[in-house]
Length: 303
Image 1 (spheres, rainbow, N blue to C red):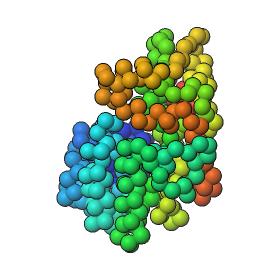
Image 2: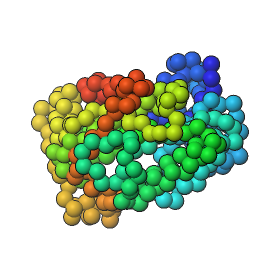
Image 3: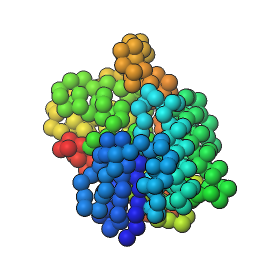
Image 4: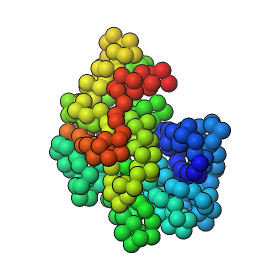
């Protein structure tokens, strides 16, 4: 029975904690509010993870430090650097392996299949933040100070998940209103279930092959938001639904009223392009397979 430390009690962090706890590990999950799943093997701690001394104390004896934190979407440039630096330092001090949850922002503009060996080539502020986090962690790994890996997903979905689909589409369809999407409704994407992201984080933490490289979460591929919404509406028993593409003018007007919506503007390029994760390596080496679309959407509808 190993001690595992998770920073971040959001949907993926909570799913990771549950999977580890059900496998018999002792889990300590850290967040500002002390949230997380209720399980006899899970200890929930309220702490500021940017306080390296406190975090290192909490990480003492842990086999792995999982970074599933998520600062406010409108505060990445301010909040991510000190938080990421603290987690990396705590892992180095305690000897814990360091497993990061990431996304595709660092790749920049890539049309089609995304493979883990693509270079970091960010074209956005958020992309540069994520690329710097990976650069610093990988540099520490290559210097022999800590074992590091990153698990990357795309367009997260799942119950209690905070993402564009769960904010602007799913609740609107369930309420009988028009869903909206600030991008091409017919561009195919990969959609990452938070439970599959958690399974990949856990598998990576337990594989000697995982360290020093990135891994893509096995996801639902080649499904446009229009197609995903159609499946969602059918499973929810919604006979008629509307999904509309938000124009640039509408997005700009919304951005003037909402700080989070304002952040969609620089990332809109991702929503107008096909963006598909190749997870062949993850499936073959780590043995993680994607959940079925219906099971994930039904979980979202019922949850």
